[in-house]
Image (cartoon, rainbow, N blue to C red; front, side):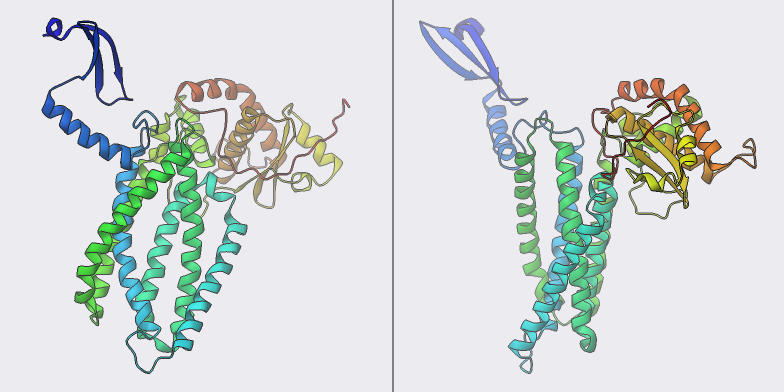
Length: 427
């Protein structure tokens, strides 16, 4: 068969898709697709779908968790679209749509107040929590979706409390503005993780196409739901809780499917604690499966990174104590119930990883003291012990981290911008 077609001159393929061959026969070059005609026709349909909804070069151009995350993200977007329809209907009813006694001015004022408070909420949340959204993208992504469901539930109930309607919808507007900031920012952080060929714009654009398709499907389903739920509170609330349960489950599965290879404080703590227990270094998949995805109250001493010098030391004597056993470009101390790390301007990424590893060890040790620890050991003695521990274990630990597949060229550690140059006895 090959000889009947001619001599193969070259083969080509588009990414991991179908391949083509070039044949030379009777001084003419022909290009033909590999495989049978039926398979080729099926491949062409799949190829069109991929080119419309998936990034160019998929799957090589994206992270390995891309498809699983996008599947669950699509499910949550669909259920959120249906819940949003129920909330929108309730909001319109609350401002007077269908009520002959309602005035346009009153409805407009209510809507403007809701939008205005939402704008203020957006600015304040971005100011207070903007730096946390990169380092804890999974937690804030899930938090945003839970808050969005709470806001929609408030909007559904608002028309049945007319005396408090404006207050309820304004509060819901603030919640939704927080959702907009947290959801959009964490989605951008996840896009950076998914992009393997600096193709963040393409991934973001295709994610928009996927979401548009899902919203279109949700719109069609909503057209059938609206006549059923109008003036029926029990059915409305019942469907809302059904869609909300699906929404939260899909969101949990989505953030759980993300496998980030960069270290944040939670993942570094998980990897370090495992290494201290048995000498093993967890892979990114193992550590991400153990990483908490819900915002929680700390059970250990909080860690503050990149602080001012006065948050670590209060006197020249404290500075000398901070420099004891320490030849690294950072200072570490315990003050006001926090482990504080003061970073020098020449510190590298590896120095930052070591500083946080040491802070994690110190925080865990002071939060859960063992019977072997001296009962009268001071904070500075604990700091000096942590320096000795890091001198012994950190270099093998860092090599193991890199060998396990972690990216040690950059991190997602939540450093503040303070950098300090301090004087030692030598200079």
